[in-house]
Image 1 (cartoon, rainbow, N blue to C red):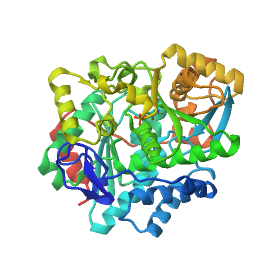
Image 2: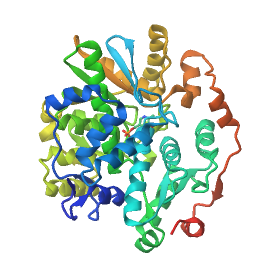
Image 3: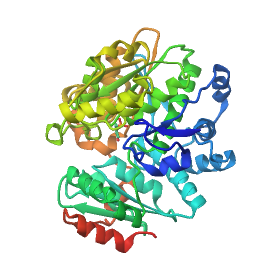
Length: 467
Ligand SMILES: *Cc1c(COP(=O)(O)O)cnc(C)c1O
C-alpha cells in the first residue's frame, strides 16, 4: 500500500516514509492510494480478537511495509498501559452507549493513537538508523499524550511548546511532572497561536528542519489516523455482540476532524456504521460545513474559548482528506478549493450536500455551554455516571439524531477529572483524584520559560536535540 497526496503533486510513499513526512511535499495530506476493504466474513472473524490483535489486523492493511510479527509486538506494547479491555463500552440509558477511549495514561482519547505512534515511529527510525526531534505546540491534551507515548524512546526527543500560564493546573501537572531526559517542556511567553507560529517558523525553514531532524506528531499524522480506525471496528463489534443490534451509529466530539475521519475511513472500508454524527461546540465550523456544504474556517480571534477546550478549533486540518473523497479523489478539485479558501475565505461544496449523508453517512450538530452542563447533570442523575464536557457535547448531539431500534455509540474522548471545574459547575461535585493522580499533581514540575522568539528557541533545541 502506498500513500499519495490529496493535492496530487508528491511521490507515492510507503507507510513508514509517509508517517514521518507530516505534510506531503506539495502541501497536501497523505492518503491511502486505495482504501483497504474488509469483508463481512473477515469482520465476523475479528469478533474473537483482543484489542491489540484487532489493531494488528487493521493496521496490517495500512502498514504493508511492516512485518506482521513486528506489528503484533508494537500493538501489544502500545496498549499494555491500558486496562484489559483497552476500550470498554458502557451503557448510560436512552439507547446510548459510551465508548471508553480515555483509559490511557493521560485520560484522553489521543493516547490510543499516540501510544501506537510511539512504537511505529521508533521502528521506522531504527530501520533507517535515524533520529527524530519532535517539535509541537499544545494547549493541553495533545502535548501530554505525545510526551507519555514518546518518553524514554531512544531515537526520539520531544520539544513541546505551551502558552505560559494558559493551561489548566491539571494539564500543566500532567506534562511538567514528567522527568525524562528526552522530554523538553517549553513555556512560551504568549498564547497558543504564538506557540504554533514558532513551530511553523522553525519547520518552515528547511535548513533548520533538516539539520535538527525536526518532525511533528500532530493530528494529521498518518499513524494516528490509522490507529484510530481500530476502535471504530472494536466498538462496532462489541455493540453488535452485546445488543444484537444491526444498526449502529457513532457520535464523535470533533475539533480537527481527526477522530471522525478515522470513523469515515472505517466506514469506507466496509464497516457497516449507519451514521457518523459529528458533534461540535460553539466553534462550529464543521457543523456549518455539514449543514450547508460551505467550509469557512475562522481566525484565531474568531475562535471562542469554551468549556470543551479541546474542540476550540476553527480550521479543521483533516477535513482535506474527506474533501478528497467527496470530489472523487480528484486532486485538481482539492487544489482549486484550497485556492478558493485563500482568495475568498471559503470553499463551496453545496452542490454535493445531499451526498454528505446519503453516501457518506455523516450528519452533524452543535452543543453549547448550557447544553454541556445540562447533559452532564442529566447523565449523572439518570445513569450515575460523570462524563467530561467533550463527551457531553457528544451525548447532546447524539440525542438529536438517535432513532428507535438503533444503538447509538458516543465516543468518550476524555475523563471528567481533567475538567473538574466544569463538572463542579454542572453538578456541584468536587471530583476526588486517585492516589496516583494526586501524586502527579503534587510532583515537582520540569519546564523552561522562553520568550516568543524563534532564534532563542532554535538555540535551545540545537543544544539538546538528538543528532
Ligand atoms: C482532541 C480532542 C477532541 C477533538 O478531536 P479531533 O480529532 O481534533 O476532532 C475532542 N475531545 C477531546 C477531549 C480531545 O482531546
